[in-house]
Image (cartoon, rainbow, N blue to C red; front, top):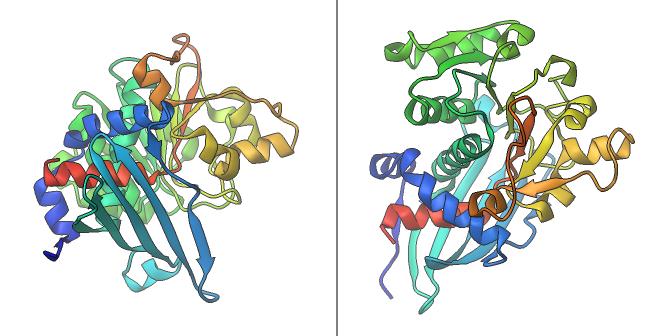
Length: 314
């Protein structure tokens, strides 16, 4: 057996960009909604008081690949200059079972997550958004900033973070784009007049109140991916027409939705539509210019597999 090639984060970004992943992510999301992709519930098991080991596995039929992502999940790692999600994505050929390649999971996940957010924004936001706000200043904020610059060249970008110094530090990394990016320290001012809002924080409790939302906005809820964490409050959920990458995942892991249901703010049958169904034309997207839409991201293994296949040119 030939040893599979190993791709570092630097090699991944050298071979492909966020815009290159829009079509692979579109196909993957449609496959999920049409039941043509395998993505069983993820597994996370405590290792010690500091972290967990996480495993995700699945398969696609187009392209015919399968694989798994194995991670060390250590929330305290960034304080030591490391990612909170460290590990690898293993890709296999589903026609004969051959291992094809191993990818740095951190780099691959960050890029594919931003790509799906851009895809959701194109499908659900009002056309040609003029102002986009990014809430957060970590790795996902950086990748969403890069993605917005590439995929929405006419948009002005705002950065907001609970620690304004971190937002300013992120802005400093984009010195050549200072005419398009500004740091806004007050959350209300950062959201006011924004067409699109990306929440990419590590918040466990809601920081964005629904009272600040305005008609016609679109929210991408990206940072919280577990049932016990959330970025927006119950009133925000009640105001949103909600979409997601996987309704099955949302039923178990969407902290915002689960919390609003538990509080009785929304009904138990609160409607959630899969992005893939919108992309395929099987479901409608935004219903009006004034509607407030939301996309709840969980991150699916099939997104990793589709991105890995694209890097290999499959």
